[in-house]
Length: 95
Image (cartoon, rainbow, N blue to C red; front, side, top):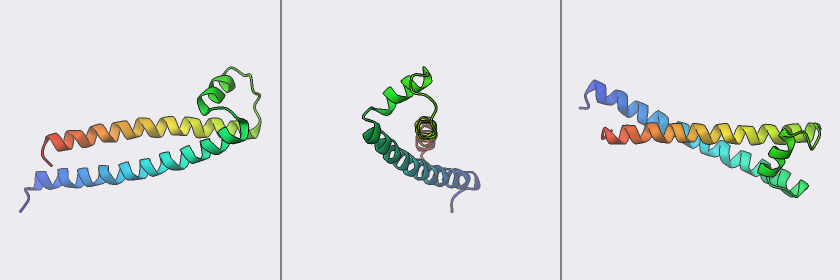
C-alpha cells in the first residue's frame, strides 16, 4: 500500500500530466490559427506582432484577433515550462 503522503504526490503528478496534455493541445490549436493568419497575410506571427505593437498595422478586428492568439501562445508556452518543471520535481522524488 502507498503511504498517504506518497499518494498525494501520485495524484499531483497525474494532475500535472493531465494539465500538460491540455496545454499541449491548446498550443497545437493556437499554432494552427496563427499559421492561418501567417498564410493569409504573408508574414510570420513574430514579425506581425512586432509591427502591430509599433502601431504600423492599424487595429483592425482581424489584427486584434491575431495579436490575441499570439499572446495566448506565449502564455501557453510559459505554462508548459512551469508544468514540465513541476513534473521533473515529482520525478526527482521518484513519484
